[in-house]
Image (cartoon, rainbow, N blue to C red; front, side, top):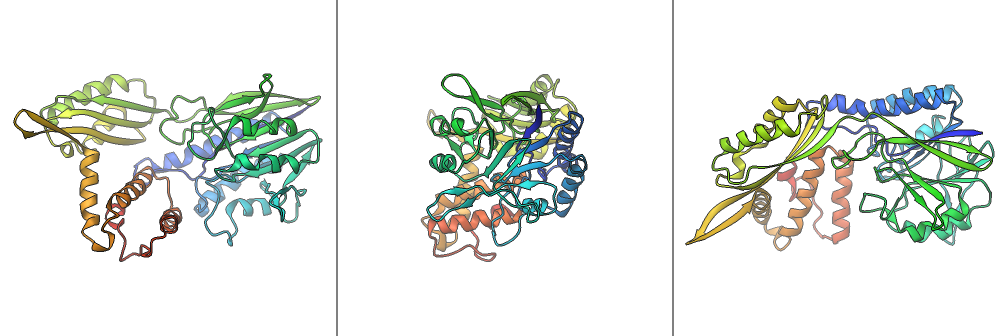
Amino acid sequence: MTKFHHTADIHLGKTYRTSAGTNLRYEDFFHTLTSIAIDAISSQARFVLISGDLFHTGQILPKTFAKTIEILQPLKDAGIPCIAVEGNHDWIHRRDSISWMEALSQMGYIKLLRPTRTENGGYRFDPFDEETGSGGRIEIDGINIYGLGYIGAQAGAHVPRICEAVTTNNNILLFHVGIWTYSPVEIGNIKPEEALPLAECFDYVALGHGHKAYTVSTPDGRPYAFNPGSPERVNFGEEGYDKGYWAVKVEDGKYTPEFRTTAPRPMQSVTVSVDGADTAEHAMETLKTELADKLQNAGEKPLIQLKVTGRVQFHPFELGRERVRRLLDEVADPLHCEIKNHLSLITGSGIGEKEHRSLADIERDVLRELIGMNSEWKGKEDELVSVALTIRDHVLKGDVEGEELLGFLSNYHEDTKDTKKPTEENNPFKAVIN
């Protein structure tokens, strides 16, 4: 009998730069991986599979790399190899540079699998070379492990080529991809019918990408693909997901997965309506009462997302984020909170008429006016407002590094064929970034 652990979407290095709890949140993801490594050693697992997104970004801090090695060292000492593939978060923009995943593989802490592309567009899974730390497949205890990683939105069209390249029996495939109807993410998925041929070539397809655990079966009910989800809660919206990893036993060619749960940080998303409030003070009183009720079981140092809604008779800006943040600190003492002001302002626009303007509408109008003040961006205000707000949201969530932000702007420039590439001096997003 062979035992192995299957995890994915660890997101080491994730934190919140705008939060006082940034250090604790940074450590959460390392604690989760540590618990999986400890269980693998105590369970005498033969190997550990990591189906992509070991890191939160391709450009990580040196201390993140050092802490990763610290966690992987006991597995290496115990002779338990970590076989991994790259997820979309692990990639770096400049492929002429060595990635942190490649460095870990060359140092022997993981075995990074990546296939070779043939001249006709097919795949070739060469045996893993221990000296170079590269290859497309590896054999352990008679089990042939193939690795693919993330190949983008057209992954479904590549499945036939993947299957054509398989030359062995008793196979596992590491594939950083989601399956539509199962995966909660919006991009990087393939259709269930596109994935089905994999069931003929692989006994166990180790998925990643979506942060929700699920199992995919053939039409006759045979499970063949397994996604563990992320073992820690990475983004708001995941509070309802079971968090953990798969512990799998293989005996006589039969794969028996067991889902083992982890202990992620508490997370809660709440919505409070202050509809009808005539003053900001009135709205704050309502917020305090509602939050005390809804967050009474939020847990220790939770992650909280608060959405404030309603039509009010005061300007939505009066209910500032810092003011609401102090209230949340008093009620629940969160490690980190995100506040979304969805209030609508009731204003008189004529006899017997009233107009409702949300804070989001006001923000867009102000930003549109700022961008439109530069004649070089005339006619593109709406498009640039959307891009700028997207950047703002990612920065506030702590989801992007400087390198990723630069890549995002460069991709925007290339996709739109803009003749005027943004620079430090000539940047329509400078106001919102600052």
